[in-house]
Length: 69
Length: 266
Image 1 (cartoon, each protein chain N blue to C red):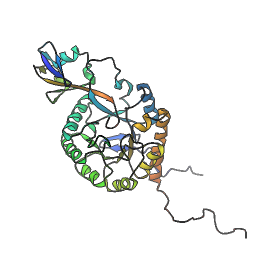
Image 2: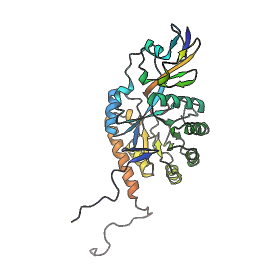
Image 3: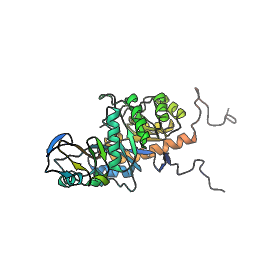
Image 4: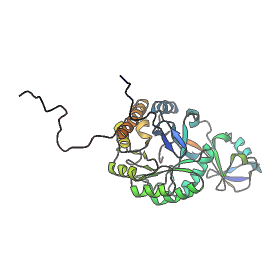
């Protein structure tokens, strides 16, 4: 199934949950925030968030910065 | 003999919203040659709050070190920023993600209006401030050195206002000192001078004008010795704060001798 991950098309074996996607990407869920179709997903809801064809996912983390980098 | 008691109580913490900070210096986490240098500079600065940017995770390359491995978050508060956002919508979206990533509802709100100057778009900033305050965020907006803009942000519920001293990363020092003084006079909320500091004296001047704190990144990160400059900035902020609290002497247009005039040999 195809999703849009951080603005790029991405193919994953679906259906899967957000937790499964993070495991697949080897991303530590405690250090990121995730947006699913423009809505921020609470960490507690990663398990129950099912991804569907065409979904838009943004995964962000903190990086070094002061002001407008 | 009695011990002399300082008139100004120590410590003199910075209070924003419901939190108390030991240091009045807030520092950034960008532009350092390495995370190790950043960590040592943070230590030397004495800062107990640092600002961080929110960016997409690099999906294809997961080997890079994490910034958070180099920040002791038990001692240093993270202040997520919305750097790089050019609309209220983008800034609000970034702030919400920052809250989830950092599990804190504090945000250094930036809405930039122009790429070359990185000056804030105060109209969009006010819109974003109102939305985020309503959502329960503690909003610290980065704004121009305009007392009216600062007043509007304060009235919209900003927990502090962050007027610029000069363009971000310019190191030009406080360009409009009198405005900073007026903003202090008008404000009920803390004022954090954000951007424009180039060297220690700039930080001192900001504090002498009545700023409650100073935020900087480039002045430390791009110094020849970032760790040495971080310590200089710590002392500069403390020094300026003490001078502000102590109250400077009045200015005179002509000399006024410090030695007695009586008893001069004739």
